[in-house]
Each structure stands twice: as structure tokens, then as C-alpha cells.
Image (cartoon, rainbow, N blue to C red; front, side, top):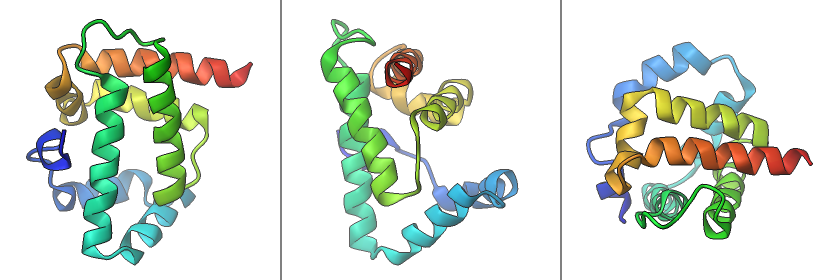
Length: 136
């Protein structure tokens, strides 16, 4: 699934002020802004495409896939590495908090629902499993 299809209608500029007011003073936000602005437009497109591909595997449109399936858990691990590589230092517990936002904020949830009905809730549950396993 292409980034354009997955995050159809999402305009990051539209939410820039909101993001800054919520997280602007955090080190993660500052690091993300610094890294993102250092990428060329073509690099940004490639990063978004990579994220969309990983997201599609995390949510997996197959209704046979469950939150604890190895392929889903592996994709979550790749997504964690993706965030660390391109945006900011992220640990499993922060990833868990992101998944909470993804399911409770309809602006995010709609993207996972495009992949499969119940995709946001599945992702939140899968993230919880992943983070719990990382604690052990």
C-alpha cells in the first residue's frame, strides 16, 4: 500500500501548530524536526513510503492475522527501528503510548482502518504485546 493511499488526506502542515503546542518542548519533537528538515523531498517521500509499507505489514489486511502473529510482531520491531532511524530515539514504552494515540484519535485511526476494519485496535493490542515482550 503506497503512502499516498494509506495516509490519504493527511496534511502534516495542517497539524504542525497542534503538534508544536503539544510536544514542541520535548527532546523527541525537537530531534524529529531537526532530522526531518535535513532530508530532501525525495528522501522524505521514500521515508514515508517505507513507513507505509511497514504499517501495512503491522496491521495486515488478512483477517487471519492476529496481534501476536510473528509477522505482525516482526513488523512492529521494524517500525520501532524505523522511528529510531529517521525521527527520534524511541523505546518500546513510548511506542506503546503512540499506539494509544493512534487508536483514540480518529485522525490517526482512519489510516489503520483503511487497511482493515478494526486495524487501529489490532495495532494497539499488537503494540502492547510487543512492548510487554520487550520488558521480559
